[in-house]
Image (tube, rainbow, N blue to C red; front, top):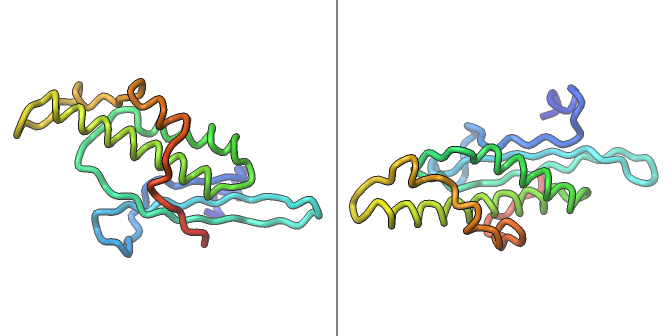
Length: 141
């Protein structure tokens, strides 16, 4: 992460690493790092780690949604990467959960949803996007 910081950005988030999770192989590890300068001029770096449950489906647009949510939530919480990432990942969780539920209902019992049925349910998730319930916590490192 320091290598990425050295290239210029003050905020770096890696959304899914191959690092092992203490919760098992069904989890992805996300890492975040944000450099800040305090009012007294001292430099501080906040680093976080999140363990995110894997989902057995392929979606189109999740990277775009993640980037948009991270931009929005870091704007709302410019000095709290932990909160911004918790809200971002929680939005992702709610949208994906809703999408899977709708896709399974459309596909029918025992049938695998098609790519079209797995289109992200953005409109239906408006409330979760605007005010997500935090369901995945970050750990400050």
